[in-house]
Every structure is written in structure tokens, then in C-alpha cells.
Image (cartoon, rainbow, N blue to C red):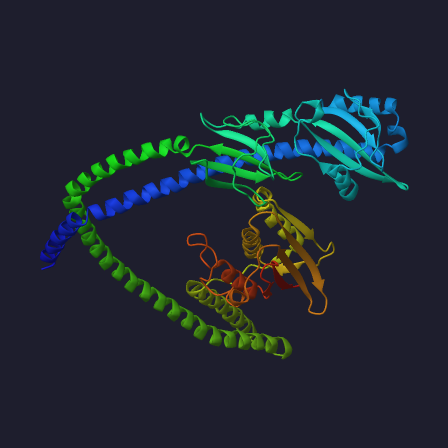
Length: 550
């Protein structure tokens, strides 16, 4: 009968597999292609983001260094000294030792008049009071211009810094060679048609692109509001759709743009698509040809599973018997322990009587004393037997020893130090130096500390602090251990279930939900208490209280 049922099942499996063979194959193929497409697209976008981020950092660093050099010069030198052409020329020479990008240097008084100048042009005496940049730097303290040609007929930009000295405000202004921007941007050009350039807020090119335009051209680029971070978008410009990675510089409203051709970047993806079609076709043939093999294998597994189930049922029955036997052993042990305790008490009473009463002269005195000794000896033997019976049904009590909690915490913390350092997590230890010792079980306490510290590291994930504090509570005669983390905290509804068996907030496969349950049980058996305080988004603190050794 059973063999006939398995035979009919085999035929059904073959028919179903053949009927729906192409459905899972097609779904798998499309799913794989979609996943590969997303992964490859993310990789391309990620590469573009990294490129534009790296170049942004470099350009911002260049601008920041130039601004810092001028700011330091303005703060450390006086107007009176810099107003002298000879002194300003020496300062300019020092600047050029550090960076050849400085083209000239000038000092301008609060009326906009250039009082001293070092450079290849005759700018001393020029009045800048009506210039927009002069009004900006006097109001804001700093001004960085766009790249322009000017009468120098050479692409450059200006940085101006104002300083108030006494009752006067004066300006230190330098012309900077912008060719460094072309050098930096040109190194990130991609492929045959990729390009990279800088745009100001009016879409005027600040560097010369690789194709189609010259420096200072206004390009037909969509308005991009200032944003933080990096963006990668597909944008159509002049009928051509391209990938654009963009980021705004920090010190200047310039947009760094890296352009890439999608057709060139996605060519490996198109090749993979044709390869996938060939693989799907071959897979369809394999599925059709292997339908019978799969059905036969499935039926064989079902037969094997049926046999294993029968074996498991027998094993469960035996386990139930053993559990019942354990309960019986515990019951017997408890029942025997009670009369043994009474017998031991009476034996002690008899020994007291032998000592107190004047019966040593009795000819049977030695026999009485030997009998009492034998009773006590055999009662102890019986108690050992019942103790082993109880151990059969449940775990034995923990081993007590004199412990230094600070030392035990430090040993436990050292196990997790490497992982914490890797994640950027620091330990802050506030140990009471004269902390009293406790009587407890070292291995079980260490298991509790390790579990809580490990949970704290998982809660922080990266870049945080775990604070371990120990102190004495004289009122209750206890040692208090507090382990606090700066993680994401525990929601109120979750906090009520934190010590429940099998309750976990971790992903499937990352936790069993038993760690805190076991810790709660261990601390209780050791005569202590454990509680948790947490506010969502503000971290979590576990308090463990243990009695001080007497």
C-alpha cells in the first residue's frame, strides 16, 4: 500500500516538474539578471561617487590651505609691516617657497586703496572700493572669487581676507593660479568619452572640459540646488543621456562634475545578458531532462524521512521516559532527604546525651558511641546518594569562591578588546579601588559579564563607549556592577521582554534569545539581582548586584 502511494507521488512530481519547468527557470534568470544589474549599477555609481568624493577632498584641501595661509599671515603680521613693499615682498617669497600657486599679493586699506603690492603688475594705488568682492570681504571676512582671466590674461582666482586691527580694517588679497584645478580634474577622466569639470552657480566652466566647450563657456546644464554629499544621476544634455556624478565644494559654490557614458560603462552588463540567455536555454534542457531524476530523488528522500521520523518518534518516547525518571529521582531524593535529616539530628542528640549524662561507666557505653558514629557515617553516605540523584534531575549549585570583581571584569573585557578596537568602541573603567571581595562562582559570573559586554558591542555597532563601573552599596551590603553602552537603546515595549526565553532583536541566525535569560538565572542562583535601564536612542545600562563576602 505504501509503495503504491509513493509510486503515484513519483508520477505526479514528474508531471508537475515538466509542466512548470520553465516558470522557475525564467523567474530565476530574470531575478539573477535584475540582481546582477543592480549590483553592477551600484558598483558603477559607487566608483563614480568615490572618484568625485576623492577629488572634492583634494580641491577643498587646496583651497583650505591657501585660505589658511593667508589667514595666518593676516593674523600674525601687522598692517604697518605689510604696508611696506619690501617687507611684503619677503613675505611673498616665503609663501612661494611653500606653494608656487601664489601669483601676487597685495594689501588694501579700509577705503579700498591698494597700499602695497608684490607681483608682475602695477596694481599699487588702484581703488577697489566699488568692487563687489571688496564689499563682500569687508562684510564677511573672506571672499573666494570665481576663476577669471582679468587683465593678467591668465586663468586665476583671488582669495581675500579682512582683518580688524585697532580702529582700522584692512584686506590681504592674493591671486592664485587655477591651473591646479585642471590638473586635478583631468586625472579622473573615464574611458573614451568620459569628462570632468568644475561649474560655478551660473553654469560657467571653471576648468576646461575634455569635449565640446572652452573654459568660461556657459554650458546648458540643469539647475542643481546645493546639496550635501554626492549625487549620481542620469541627465540628458543636448539630447545626449549620460551619467553625472556631482558634489558641491565646501568653501566655494562650485559644482564638481564627472561625466560618464552609460553605454561604455554598461557594455559588460550587455554581454552578461546574452550569456544569461544562453545559460537559460541550456538550463531549460537540463530541467526537462532531469525531471525524472529529481522526482525519483525526492521520493527517495521522502522514504528516508519517513524512516527517520519513525526513529525520532521512538527517541522522543525514550526521552520522555528519561524525563519522567529524572522527576522520579528528584522526588525520591527529596523524600529520602527529610527522614535522613531527622536521623542525623537524632544521632547528634544522642551524641550530646552521651557527653552530658554520666553513663560512661556503663559497660555498653563504647557500643553506644560506635553505633552513633556508624549512624552518622551512613547518613552522610545516604545524603551523597540523594545529592547525586538530584544532580541527575537538575544542575548542581554553583561553586563558591572568594572573588575580586574588578579583576574578573578586566579579564572578561580583555576577551572583547580586539573586536571593540576594530569597531572603534572604547572601554571606560570606573573601578572602586577598595572594592570588597564576594563569594561567588567565577566561571558563571564571567559568562554573564561576557554576554552583557558582547550585547553592548552589538548594540553600538561602531564608534561608541562602554562604561564599566563598580562600587559598594553599604546599605544593602552588596557590590554593584554597572555596564553602560552608548548604543541605540531598547524600546519600552521590548524592555519588558528582555529576559524572556527565546526573545531576541537580532536577525535570524545571529542570536538564540537565551543569553540574557541564562544570565538572569545565573545571577539569581548566585544570590544577586540584575536589572536594566534604557531609553530608546540613549543607550542601555545593566546593573548587577551581588552580596559582599562575609
